[in-house]
Length: 275
Ligand SMILES: [Zn+2]
Image (cartoon, rainbow, N blue to C red; front, side, top):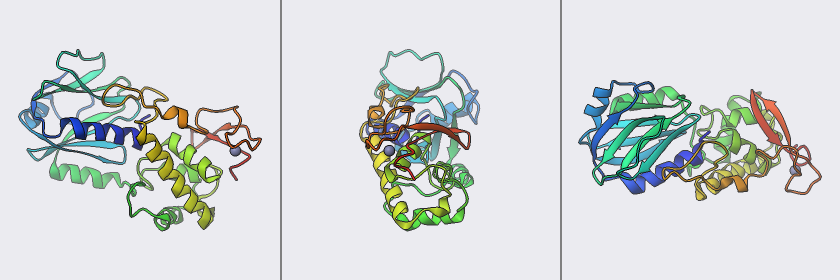
């Protein structure tokens, strides 16, 4: 499932490739996961220039020169792909934006949990406010004190569950929560309010390291995720615990990676180094 690094990878690629381009035509193949009619989507996008590509949590936003924005959430299996002029749509392509340079921006989602919404500026602001997203973990202002404040708001919640909750910290999902906790040597089922100051500092370091490390190699393709160019990301080889159940901990501490359930999610951790 795409998390912050995967959405950020797509954002960066699109920022480079499509900002300044105009949407010449919009084709709607399915309206199932749209918030407006096909006619309204066309009217709101055709002729508009793409002026920015932004991200908040796992939400991708494409700002248009006409004051509107497209908000895309990839959820489980969504993809945003930039393809050439003659590339045919895939079976689950829902919308195609044909750009002024001949390229096509396609949005597809075979499990259909994701969505594409067309918003005016004020609608987008309202929508973002309603999501109640927590702070962005890669923000310069997000320091150990800010992380500690997140934990103190809900001290009894298990630490992994808390860092995966977008209303407490934005964009960290199952993979990066497991990796960051392993980095910080913290057991995933500890109560958030229980962590020492030193552990919080380490966890923040871990969160930054695993997110930035993944962005540097265009994300983790443990499932259906591919970047905007259709390429798999290379981060699987950097994973220390996720997906490594039954294998020895890479710290060579005698630990064998366990997989347990925490708040309904498969949780990988090392009983030897994560206390
Ligand atoms: Zn270990």
